[in-house]
Image (cartoon, rainbow, N blue to C red; front, side, top):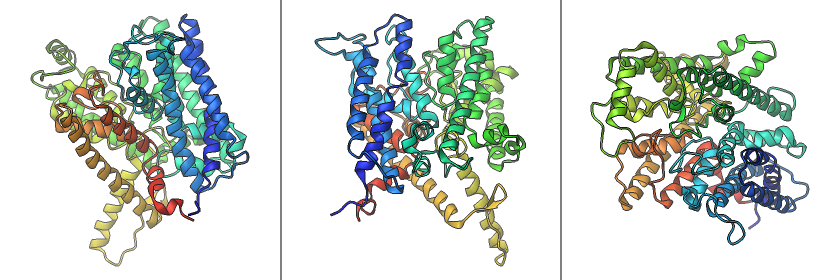
Length: 534
């Protein structure tokens, strides 16, 4: 049987991306040098990625990319960079016996399944973690910065970045970006697709630098002494990609209210279609507020925030007693209730921070929301399925799909009452093609089917290994990994981790993160015989 896909061309371009992955690896290497730490994990990874990338490039010196090769290249690239990205974790934990001793042999990342989980969580901007101890006593600052950087690289898209800077990927770049970009499609902002990619990454970089400067300013002015230059850069690197990793064990709870208020608008921006910022910078700022998807996005955030603010203000948003095996203590619960209940600013801040963090799939936490009541937690679970805008760095289903579904339901109700009426579904003043609407319904249904099936499988696996998980914990773990959200509830809450799952369960969630970041179809299409046959 002859293959219909030129896999050699796809793998050749995977090699090109891997080869240039060596460049960002110099960032944590320089951080390690500054803090007088070992650079061995990064030197080894640079050598491996350059050698492997060069070898793959030689499979096809002049690759020709079409739509089919684009799907394979994008899916393979994300898996390949994840494997390479796990190497620094493994070298830090295991060393290179007998030449290099282990730096932190007590690290949970000594387990290859854990290292792969952490790497995939980073590049897919999920933010779920298996680090048993998030501190500089267990991990070097260089490794922790690499962990942050993986999310920044994955946020706007590794392949989109490659299209922006590598001439060999500019031909066929549209197919590659369409296969990788989050949401139903990517808007072509300029005549050349490489220019569009550079425009998106330019906005992304600009927001990152601005946030880092503002956060560092809090430290300089002693408003938040904990916001050092390292912390400011580290959190800017994981806000804009809606990643959520933090070198602080308590996430954003470790910082002041001022830092939390600064981070909130940047999370909102990260969940917004970046094409809108391009229109604003090119002289049409009204385009942002006239965009129907953006207005719906802000409306959803405001509505959920209002509900949770009331619950927290009245005290109904908190549990009455600390459950067994909890990630917070009775003292923590008492402090939360004392600081938030009956107080307007803390109630609104905690509500808006967590709603924006979950809806945009950033995954930061300004407090341990395991202390919230079941009603408040189920509201957050619902928010995990919403997602950011198309063309943003957010995950989950995406707000635009829900918007189209609601408008199409409204259309069906209208045409049921008026059978002779012709009423197209419009988005941004344009009538949507019925095929596009069916595609949105199909994706959403497939997403929900995978969620429920995966929840069942994960629950069975946890039960086999004696792990006692509630239905909410299991569902939140799947929603958080498939939707690239990060934290769930219970043991996988914002102050917990996914470490207790079996290796099989963690590898299963690695696959969920992978297909969730690529929006399912680019991965599943590879499993169909029609894709491969001539």
